[in-house]
Length: 387
Image (cartoon, rainbow, N blue to C red; front, side, top):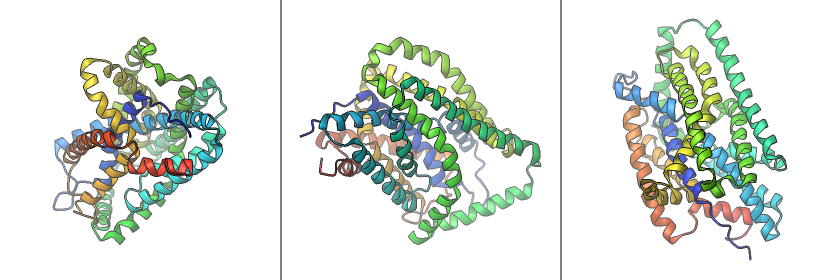
């Protein structure tokens, strides 16, 4: 019988932390554009400030952290298969197939911005890249990030150069589209599924583009896993401190520039220019967040939250799907149908409550069960037997 792999608690804690960032970003989409009773957008300064801060500090940073951890976990699964004398290729194929199937169900039924389908698809080239040396993997990741940013920057500069100033009629048309989308998501379950299918088709091209950035995160995680980076973080304390000092200012500057372009004061023509800078500088801020959290967890206050984050990280897939389920029940026709009924500040406050509840529930569940429901399903598919 295969002996269980030792848990890397640092990876679990980072995964639990990343859940909050993913929730904050996904909730803005699932909640819909906040509309006043007359049909126009919310004008609250609190909503605008919350939206601006999430763009600057959260957007594009946490899917990169999850991607890094996915690549890191790939190396652990490979070692586990080797210890068990099992075929890693067969295990990996079953795992990515299960992820892809979960992603389809999640995207169609709950959230069209699903990432699991992308992870499942990119798991094939990740398997092909498993023999890369760590330095080679890092170099290729850098090229992928730069290429994604270059594509966005080229498109963004063309938009700035060729598009005219924002026409008030465009804003009116956007408001009309928002009302149509609101009607679709506040209809019955069938209307919600049709709306999700339409959104899935609309975001397919962007998934291909941002897939390169996600795969860069996979490669960085692959390199880190080959070096056992998270298995002995106490040896890298000085390096983590240097990482925060050197890269945090750059990451924050890039995030602020992205928010200026996406949320103002620059107009909508600058959106993709800001996205390009955000993609290019996100690794700096993501690395700073990760190193900062790992340093915090070694302090007395940090040890108080380490257990909750670690438990949440062990149930990350279950928590991710649960977040979408709760948001769908609140904002779509599956439940309360509050789509478009709240601004970003209220949605963000609700996310913090939900995340706190997940941290508390995770600690209780992990005391009794080794796996969450989704983790058990994925593990069963991977091993082709009950774990």
